[in-house]
Image (cartoon, rainbow, N blue to C red; front, side):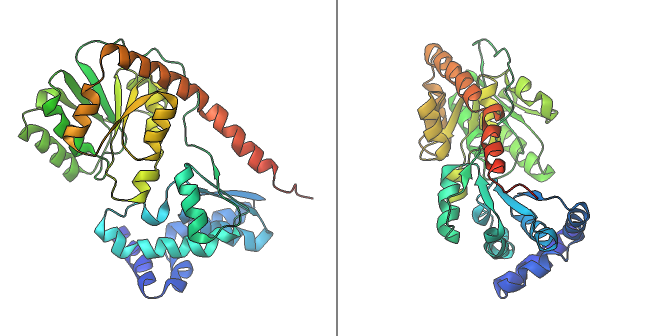
Length: 331
């Protein structure tokens, strides 16, 4: 409760006084501690991970002229735009911080072409942000053989806005499938999901599993056949998202299902490693999954393994190294 009150106190004023956002940002102890630790360390290059790190990075820059790499993993100004409370309290503050400090960054990177284009247009950036996808390091696993029932997987934080309810509803139309929901979530939301599964009589074909250790994510996923990320298209953030879970699915040899008209859907089509659902709706998800016969599923899973190898962090990190090499060497 105290943390929420702090967020409201430091972010809500941006609705009437956006110029105060930078000062209010450091009213939170965690932000002051990050700034002070960074200034004490005094690195010559700071990799600012998402918008909340920008003010601290800029504080360091004022001390020693550090070069800032701003790494925007999300389209921050719409990251939670499906949440009315976030829009009211935080959206303008987020935009004010990003607008004020993004120009101080020597280099801007992000995870998708859609976010790169949107950031350049929104802040009139002279250079388009570089795209470096958030992918796992290459890991070779043995995908599960295709057997019955076909196992569908959603892993990651279980929270609204990720198409989980629609995936549960799709199970009514997929009698020969099993859905695994692996991850943590707010207790009230998990109770809601369990009640939803029970209301349609699917308790025996929907499993709720706890999150596994990061090093075990891909191996645990490899016990399934199909990975789901069918988010609703009510925000540009969802349309632009290239979530790391999709690349974890691919690394595990899963065919991926995504909502149509998203950047992820275009990626799946280019690499032949998944299918699209026409909408974030039970019927659309069921149609996409139900069309996967054994031959097509095997072909898509093979495509997923190839796509994972081509887009693993072992490849993506080379882009980051080249970007850092562009920075002037300290004298």
